[in-house]
Length: 316
Image (cartoon, rainbow, N blue to C red; front, side, top):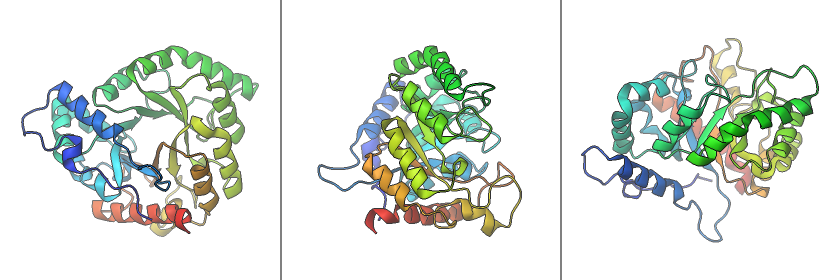
């Protein structure tokens, strides 16, 4: 099954003149793009995709942005160093220059990934994202607890409250990714986070199966437990890992369709909860900061192969 059809250029404001957009024009266009319905009444469940810029290493934004539509994505996720450098590229272009480049390619900035800033240092990034019409930032949770995991997660959510107030004002959601050697790492920590964040609509979970037990039914059960607190999903399995240099064929086993994880129960669980967030086809290369394959075309082809494999259970 193919992913959702990308909106035509005129839908996202790309038919406007070549003059520099005003901030109001740009926000109106990106808001319209974001609000456009992906599915009609009675349409079958479909996934929505974003392109993670780091999959292309440090390739230039002008080379990456045309690939967004090719992977059936409706926006881009900008990564900073060391995984990529597109967030820094955007800063170097300036807001007007970056806005023109997005307009030229009919792409919206949907989210940024900012592990480098941490969960308590996101205010300026939230303002930046808001100005471009984006609405999600993924970050980490800090170090593992010394004592009770449950109490540590409760304290984390409490400490996030002033930052969530800023997120609410700006219409941005902060998503915490489960990650190795972090507070939010295990299935239990994720369940605690979902529970304690129930009353915090701007705090959600970005789920990375790579960092979890590679058991399809366990992953599916976790997805059902997280329910509406799941706001971002990585189509990413552990494969043979991403911490040491491997032959390329082995490294690629992090991707659906390349590795051995059965994503069927996972996909069905996402459908069962009517998951409405985005999916990113994802992996990490070794070393960080290089593209997963040598050329943009090869990266895109691999992502499409993985996307089709990931979706297979929706029609199978």
